[in-house]
Image (cartoon, rainbow, N blue to C red; front, side, top):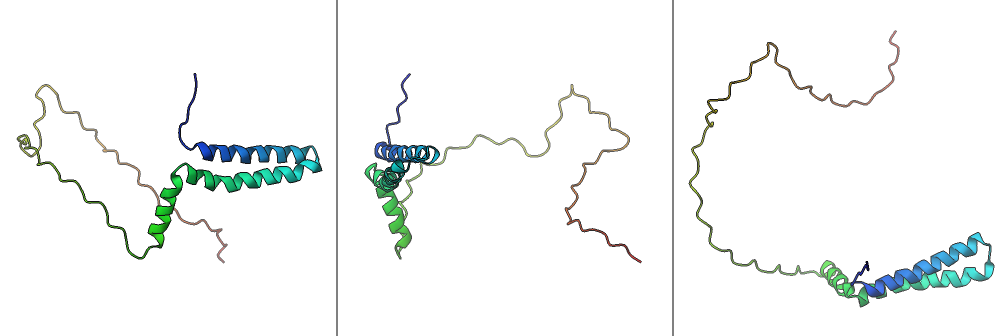
Length: 134
């Protein structure tokens, strides 16, 4: 089975570059390899710089630019017009209002002597230590 994610090709590449730098930096710190620290931090920085570039290249940058322009503009962009609705369908005849009659074969349930009430939730109060009153 082959998994495919068709979108965001350049963004994934930028994240892979950043992840490579992150892994090499982890190896440099844990293995105490000072010669690997500077190149791994440069690869991480390059990956961070490439993420917005990849978003823009994948086409999501234009959506982001439009969102920023809408937020910074003084005038609100007009909303697109709604489509004309189709005429309403005729409704089926409504049933008579009121309480429906109980079926004749069902007997009503026997009532208990004391009705049970639902427990009401108590309001929460802040607990403060009681001071002894003298």
